[in-house]
Amino acid sequence: MALEIKDSNFEEKVLNSDKPVLVDFWAAWCGPCRMLAPIIDELSNDYEGKAIIGKVDVDENQEFAAKYGVRNIPTVLVFKNGELVKRQVGVAQKETYVEILDSNL
Image (cartoon, rainbow, N blue to C red; front, side, top):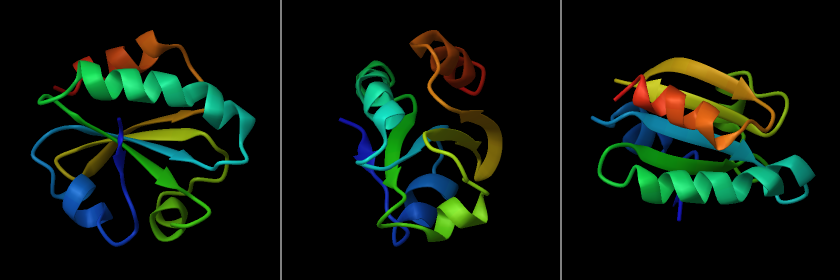
């Protein structure tokens, strides 16, 4: 399962991580977000120990969604060494996320 990331632990879990971090900004009412959820969970298993895969519920945690300009969901952001390195808006194939993660390992 993907790590639940909140505004309160975003800096610790994402910005201060020594591993690449993929963050899925989503909401429970969002149909495309529900389509992406199984892919995010698969990535969480596939990259265990190599990268952090997390999810931010934008209805409950708006601070970092606003800070990084997340206006449409799902939006996946990838961070490396605390810096935003990639943005993917909308649902993509699993291979897209694999390529992004592999290029940042």
